[in-house]
Amino acid sequence: MQLLNEKKPFFLDKNYSIIQFAADLGTNRSYASKFVNEELGVKFPYLLNSLRLAHFVKLKSENPQARISTLADHCGFNCTLSFRRAFVKRYGVTASDYFKKQNL
Image (cartoon, rainbow, N blue to C red; front, side, top):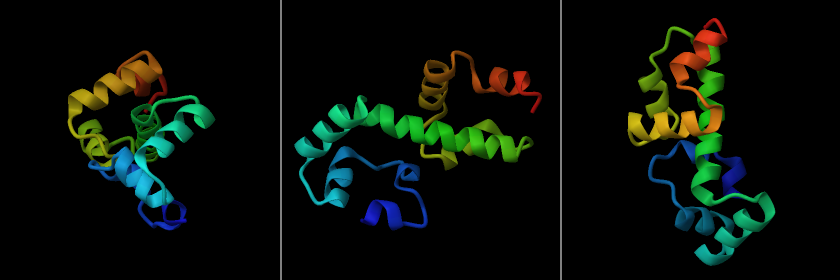
């Protein structure tokens, strides 16, 4: 399966969509969306953001000096505002506050 064999994870692609996800799985958009919704219990954009945020937290923890905006861009977010919204929705605080609490 192409999704699992790529060196660069699919979720880091800023333009990755449910259509590309479906193509990578060898199915259509409707089936791919249904799979994510029913099997994982989330909508596709939430899945992408969750994977991106987990990757961001890992990178920031490993590189505390790195700029948040640089890492957010590297993790597939199209803009700082969308990253900020996703981070606050997931963690309840901004990334800056989250890492201050972690002493990073």
